[in-house]
Image (cartoon, rainbow, N blue to C red):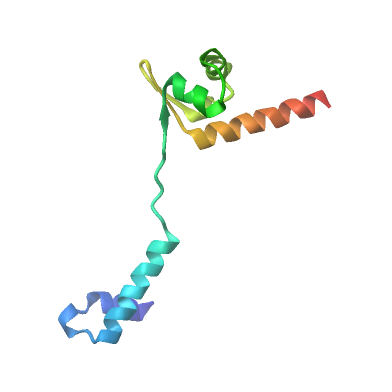
Length: 102
């Protein structure tokens, strides 16, 4: 690790080809280990209905029920939903409901 730090501080014109390739390989490995995380959101009740494959009325019921409140972001009249989080919250709610019925 200390050797890589020395290579990062060394000017490029003073590096050998082997040193340059070692530095480049270390950068590729770190970028593979830590991929950028992009959060994809869906917007509106229509997208919510598409996500849950239901009608707009049912999508409104899901939104108003409070089950997916942690996945919903509201700014005025605009609604943004984190789809992965919403689906996991609905699955969790279904599991809880089935355990109560048993």
